[in-house]
Amino acid sequence: MSRREIREQIFKILFRIEFNDLEEMPEQLRLFFEQEEAMEEKDQREIREKYEKITAKLETIDGILEENADKWSISRMGKVELTLLRLAVYEMEFDESIPVSVAINEAVELAKKFGQDESPAFINGVLAKLAR
Image 1 (spheres, one colour):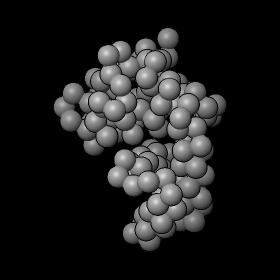
Image 2 (cartoon, one colour):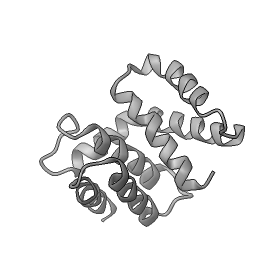
Image 3 (spheres, rainbow, N blue to C red):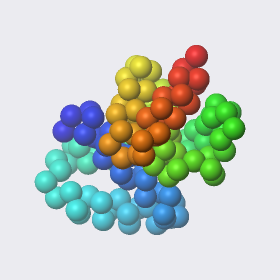
Image 4 (cartoon, rainbow, N blue to C red):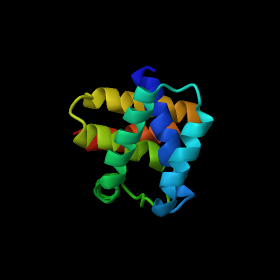
């Protein structure tokens, strides 16, 4: 899988947090990987590891978002946008292997695919403020 495809799969798993308790997520991960039968084990491992790293820092990530999303609390954000922002903030702040510009661009591209018409601009605006 390409990095973009892996990022998309991580987004899909993170999105499930919005509908399940964190205690239920190990079962959700199992179900997710069962549905993705053709996925190579190394890709599954990479996706699982990054998911775990993000969820371990979720409280910190949400704090960063609250500080940088002018007039938007995370409780008011759409679930797709919140999930994309969480993924991008993790990549920008904690994953040194991903340049900030790439994290922003990838989040905007995923917003075009999964979000509403306004999602890419919203994502770009929040992340651009964070990048300054």
